[in-house]
Image 1 (tube, rainbow over the protein chains, first blue to last red):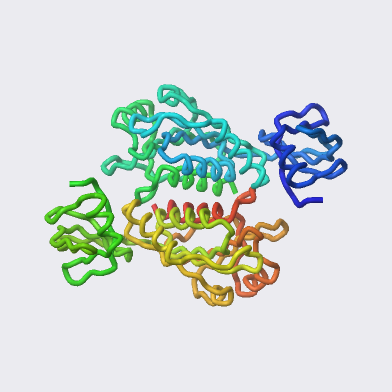
Image 2 (cartoon, rainbow over the protein chains, first blue to last red):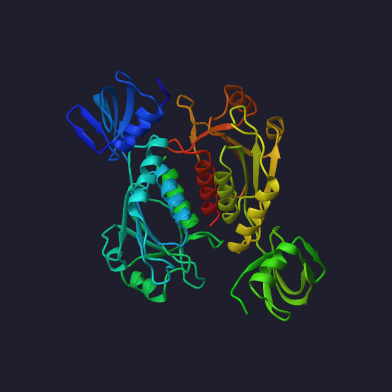
Length: 232
Length: 232
């Protein structure tokens, strides 16, 4: 039997889990799992399952669940990030944020973004890959929102990371890691003056991401890491 | 005059800085800087300079320094990391660690590493690129060491990140960010039993990188971010 893997499915009914074509290709096609093999899997919503493969078809397979655990999480971090130019960098960011259990990644088309589209389906695929690889139980919610809808998000702790010098900012620390947090990080060109002022008007607190000028995806990953490690 | 850039040179004599072929290609070739233009640059050793370009030749240019600042840093973090299979992932790791001002990145050929060579020169080039882009003043020292030489590093706080369950581990937190720290992170296959025991015998403390199983480069970046943000 192949080594330890965590598979993903959103289709669970009672004691039975059904896996889609992608998972079938991976588990059965690549890893050569067989009927009767034990597998581990998650629904990405905090439930982690142990089961036995009981049926394999061409494009799907199923498993009988014999044990499940809830992986609790203390706090929630939503990172809203301006779309950046490089797809690679955004995909890497999604992979890392998923490994570190961020609850939500929201992209927005900032006034200074150099591009305004992204392939959400591909991002979700990357997140599933990272979830499986890290044996996690929480799949981040990945969305593309308009700026005005970002401003409407109702989350207790609201922060905006601003690069420009001259704004009085707090250092980024998760002193209440059990609460819900929203952190906005701008695209390469940073936030526009209007975007920044919108946020300040809505009681977002400006935070400082250290002394260097981090790339967008570095700032996102740094915040994710800080949050992840604060949950220890 | 082009926007704000930070150039890099290791050749500074009195009030004169000399830039090499790479920097000349970037500053003069790509960005079209001219004699008389103001530039900012660093030696990667904590000094940040302001100067004026006073001479341009085909493969080099120089600048007269009129102001310099020291960018102090409180603590030091050396991350020693097993060589991993993917060059992309290692390069990305070097880029991120440089942006976040890590003092030293040491690669070693772990017993479970799937490869044992890497192009140090290329890694250093990537670090210089990241230093310039982040307007930092500290270039990490990048080395390839044998395992036995890793064990000889004399650094006050010595930690080893272990994935395996069952070892009693501390959470990774930099409660003394002003001190010197060494953190060992294994390759994809983790440390071998022997490597781990070597470290415990030398008073390395096992640390836990959260609840998920992070990829090698994710663990490295997470530690770097935690250290970087603790210096705020």
